[in-house]
Image (cartoon, rainbow, N blue to C red; front, side, top):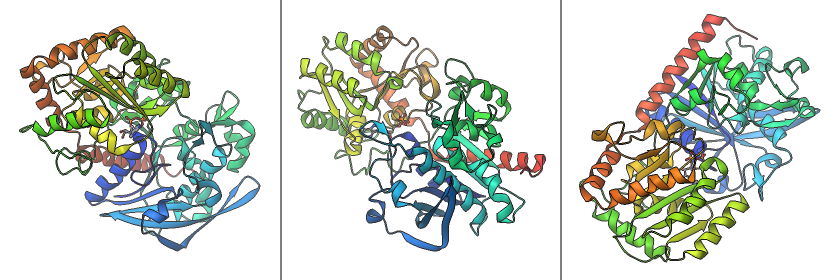
Length: 490
Ligand code: ADP
C-alpha cells in the first residue's frame, strides 16, 4: 500500500512527546512490511545540520495563506526501507528550536504555521508522483488537510482523492483559534459552521478534520470509548458519538530497537529476564548519578513526563508527602507547569536523601530511570495511550497506573489475571488511592518470588509494532473501501 503520513513532530528529528515516537515508529514499521511510506513534517532548526537531507527542486511549495502567498521547499531523507521523510522548509514558520511555544507561551502565529503545514500535506498528497492511496494525519496541527485536499482536487486533475484517516493522540489539544483566523485557510466561509470548523465561535482545527475524514482512530481502544463520553470528550464527544461507526482504537507499539535492555547505548549494564544482575547494577549507578544513598535494598520509584495536570501530578505531590516517611526513593524527570516544577523541587529539598527531581528533557536519563527503577508511577487523570508504562514493562520495572485509557489496556493487574499480572492498577483519581497502590508495591518488593513473577511477565509482554502496523493497514483498506463506496466527494 502507498501511505502518506503527516505529523508536526517525528522522532528522531523532533519531539515533545509520545506523538513523535509513535509516528516515527509507525513509518519505519510500515516500510519494513513493504509498504511505500511518505512522512510530511516541518524542518525545524538544527535538523539539516544533523541529517544528510536532499533538496527536491521538483516539489516547490507556493500556497495561499489568507491574503498572501507563502513559499516553501521540500527536503527529503530516506532513513529506512521504503520510508521517505518530506521535510517542509519554511524558515519564517519552522526555523525555531522549540516546536509550539517559547517559555510556556504558544507562538502567536501557530494558526498560520499549521495551516501552511496542512496545506502542504494536501498539496503533496495530490502531487507526489507515487500517488499515495491513503493519507494518515496525526493530531490537530495537520487535521485541516482533508478540507484542503478537496480544495486541491480541481487543480490536481485527479478525481480520486486519497481517503483520510485521522489519529487523535490527545483530544485535549484541538488547535483553537479566534474566528477571524479562519480567513488564513482560504476555505469558503460556509465551512465555518458548527458541524465542521466552528467550535463555540472559534476555529477548531482538530474538529474540522474529525468531521471531514473517512476514519478516526485513537491510540488505545479504551480511550476511543472514553472520548465519546462527556467526561473525557473535551466538548467533541457529541461529534464523536455521531461518528461512532468510524471511531476505533489501536494501542501504540514500542520501538524495541530503541527501547531494549541489551545493546542499548544508554545502558551500561545489559540485562534480560534470564539474568537481571545488570538491572541491579543500573539501579546502583542511577542512585550514584542522582546523589541518592546507594542501596539495592531500598525500593526505587521512577516517573518521567510532562508536569501537567493530565499526568496526575496534582495527586502525586500529596501522595509523595505522606509516602516519603517510608524507606523508599523516588526519582522524577520532567518539565512543564512552573508551579508544579517548583512544588516538586521544594518537596525534594525537604527529603534530599529520598526524592530527586530533575527538571528538563533528557532522553539518556529517561532510559536509565526506566531501567534502574523497581516501580514506575503513572497516575494520569487521562491517558490516550501512554508510552512510559510500555517502556517500563520491557525494562522489568513494574508500572503503577490509574485505570484509564491506554494505561488500563496495556497493564495487567493481579485481580484481572494473577498468572499474567505485570503491574498495579488503581481506580480513584486521588492521592489516597495512589498512596495505597504504592504501599502494595512496597509489600511486593519484599516478596522476591512475587516481584520476580511480575518482572518476568512484564518483560515478556509484547507491544511490538509488527501487530500495530498491521492494524493500521487494515484501517487504510477500510478507508479506501469507504471512499469507493461513497463515490468521489468534492
Ligand atoms: P505524552 O505524549 O502525553 O507526553 P507519552 O507517555 O505518550 O506522553 O510519551 C512521552 C514520551 O516523551 C516518552 O517517550 C517519554 O519517555 C518522553 N519524555 C517525556 N518527558 C521527558 C523528559 N523530561 N525527558 C526525556 N524524555 C521525556
